[in-house]
Length: 329
Image 1 (cartoon, helix red, strand yellow):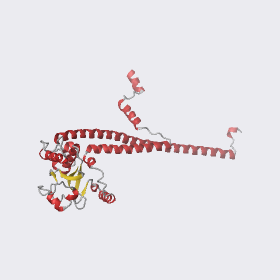
Image 2 (cartoon, one colour; image 1 turned 45 degrees about the vertical axis):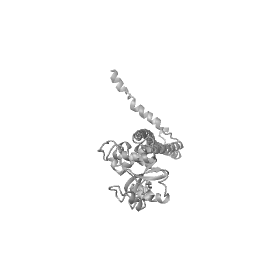
Image 3 (cartoon, helix red, strand yellow; image 1 turned 120 degrees about the vertical axis):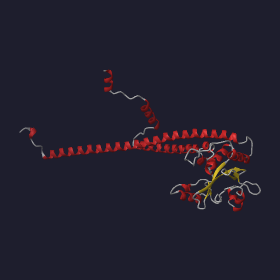
Image 4 (tube, one colour; image 1 turned 120 degrees about the horizontal axis):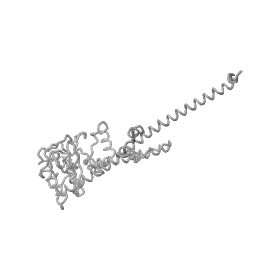
């Protein structure tokens, strides 16, 4: 009988089947492991790409905010030099700003925008309509006073529940005291002896009524019983809880930081947000780099990613072999 046709012994057949089974199992495990590794690397690179986009965007936003803040400060400096006397006391500077707001040069009468919460000093200083609203009028006063060398901040007058803002005024630091100025009514609050009043003094009803007696149309709800510098209660869901807890745990947390520039100047907001996002992106970038080294995957740097994107954007596309043949013929 031909040797090719003979049946192998039972033991040899069993060994062959085991070998084939082992090879199939090993190849299957390698395929599954390779697929899992590729999937993990693709997810890792996708996250890395997102963080790189965040980092580059944060850098651009910070630079934009810095340039915007510089131009705003330059504008306010020139504006204050035109309005405020070169050498005068703090009280004279306040009076000069209020007089300019009330009887200053002609300004645009109509504000062509639906944004009544505008916080851009270039707008609030140049539109008569915005100078008649307490929030934007205080914004204009605080920015102009700060540019003129005064330490000023906004003060919110809240309702009895502390949930809503009834009015917005300004505080100016004079001789170590934060005195009250109302830019909307162009008034500096004083008592019967002509002394400038603080918000603590205006919380006394008798003093408050005397100080506001000559202000036509001044709403009695604009009192100083409940005040705040920054109002978290406007935030949905958690605002009131956050405001209450912050006030109970740290009663003077609003006093130690002048929040006014942050909430009253959009250019400064942009710069601060850009810096915060930049710090977050750097931390995430370091975390991704650490994890990449741990799993032996090296993430693409954001600058390399930008370079590749620039090359792909500005370089001419490659011509294929078929297209080159077509052009030569």
